[in-house]
Length: 484
Ligand code: GLN
Image 1 (cartoon, rainbow, N blue to C red):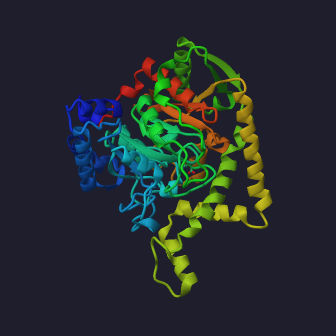
Image 2 (cartoon, rainbow, N blue to C red; image 1 turned 180 degrees about the vertical axis):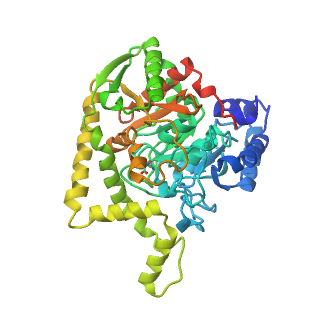
Image 3 (cartoon, protein in one colour; image 1 turned 45 degrees about the horizontal axis):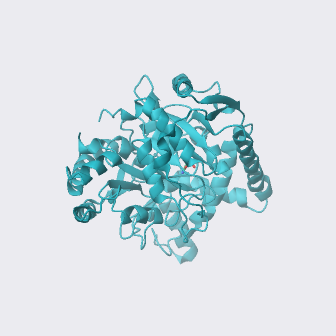
């Protein structure tokens, strides 16, 4: 088997069996990156030298018999994760020259177990977008069809896994940014429950919604990555102090007797017929495996997109106030302090980020605070209650990830509202603070992947991983490789 095609488990077995070294594996990935980057554009920064040095020390650890599951495995990170000494842009011109003095906890946990960092991945600017088109570093292209978007905002993280430029990656998900690109690129992506993974050292977009999670080739790898990054972090007061389950051990428990909810608001007329067909087939597969389906309702779904885009923009306008040209990032030459702030921010931020800052500032302004921000918070509570009620009857829910397969580059770029609406099935999960996973569930006639979403109860990652694994064992979608 070709090294670049391997999962974490397969590469680990090869490393442990001394059939391949981490330096060989890392070199193979770097060669692959060099070969396909001109077409895909997943990376903003490739850290070849550091990667080879890390691989060398991983090989030394392995030679001493210390072969952890992640030792010597080449991974890559969305450019939103701070990496000490390695440029971190968050897809923005304003951080073009930013070299962080410390690293994100999630990356430190992987690094300490011997993982190798290949580089930093392209994303929508400050994670605002669903297509990667808002990156200041060019649009990542979908490796299944390079005229299409890879999804966003963790588009580079998904495209890199699909194009075999990294064994697995980390992304972040505020309103769908792990699950939607995973669906569009045919990989597995999991957004953990709010509080499950530390966000220390992850550049903040909307702090009441942001979560860190893995993108991988299969569900077993997803369990390994989640286990590695999950857990309480004293440096992030929103990380929850509950024990991390052994997700991998639960994978094989099957779905017999599990009750899966089908929220009726997610199976609407406007759904693409090919997505609809893939969902119907997935439901059939689960029935065959012994799961039971129950119709449920999430009645406030219609308000989710509006609620999200108010709350996320409000929080973003506050979080992004720190980019003022004084402490870090781009600084413009101008007369006076105010002139310098204005010019630095005008030059540093792209249009989508400016749009969000303006919407958010408006929603938080004294005259409109009650009408927009407070109202959105109240609707958020209603949406959370919808989930609590639905979960009283079921163990998990099954829905599409996105209403259509990946769209063409440029198709929605001029119409922000259309772009926002494409997040309809992923956003409610973030508002409710619970967990969900996207996994490959079919292809469109034109050869684009279609994703299935499994939504779990808060801290119900074990069940969605278990159900995802059962689906994967019964299907072959996750074994398909891009034509590139
Ligand atoms: N597309 C959504 C947005 O633009 C979600 C992004 C995300 O999850 N980071 O806000």
